[in-house]
Image 1 (cartoon, rainbow, N blue to C red):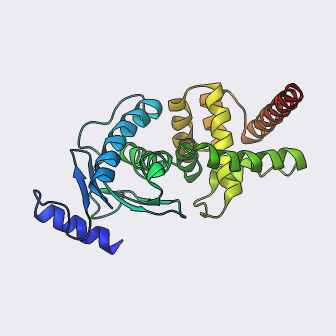
Image 2 (cartoon, one colour; image 1 turned 45 degrees about the vertical axis):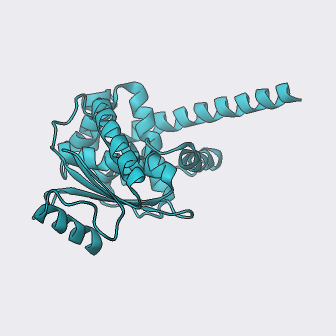
Image 3 (cartoon, one colour; image 1 turned 30 degrees about the vertical axis):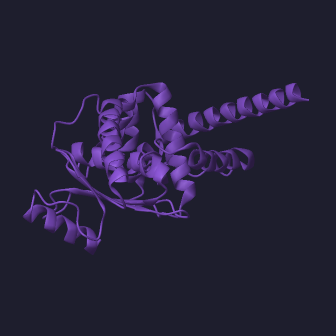
Length: 259
């Protein structure tokens, strides 16, 4: 983090500076400042970041963010064996820019890992400190690639198969989710997917904001005409079971046709 702050300080003092001597890739526009391992990567990251910013905002907010609102510094380190991202939103004293750190492959640095972290930045720009943790992570998780999504789906399938369902109320009310708590990430993503089948993505976002503000039961009544978290729990579990049954049947049919 100290390196990123130092780079940012240099950038702010000398706006027309070229890439820092120890980092070959540098790109900037009205919304992003990118530091990367090489120039072609920096250019690719900033192009994709601008694309994702528009897509994410339209999908979840219903409109684009104004230019230069929610400016973000993106620091990219290429790794062949890691896939990590971290977003520090500009929601505290003295923070004027969002900061994102990516340690991942070139493909994911311009793809799913970048999109995941940019989702956090877009949401923090529009709703600083307003989103509950489960919703913030759930929405970002929906940007993940097939490999990560499959891991979460296997977790949900295990809950369905063993009838060991986590209580949704605990997930909704959690103040933090550990990076190793894959079960909570899976539940948050699955519930978000289900609620988005009942209405729009912006409706889910407003439900999450209202749930934190007025309580989850009231927010469910307001946005989904559900009486309580417990009713949602039952309906979500039934939806998961139906989805699992459909997937199993499809797999069996595919296998039979292949023989």
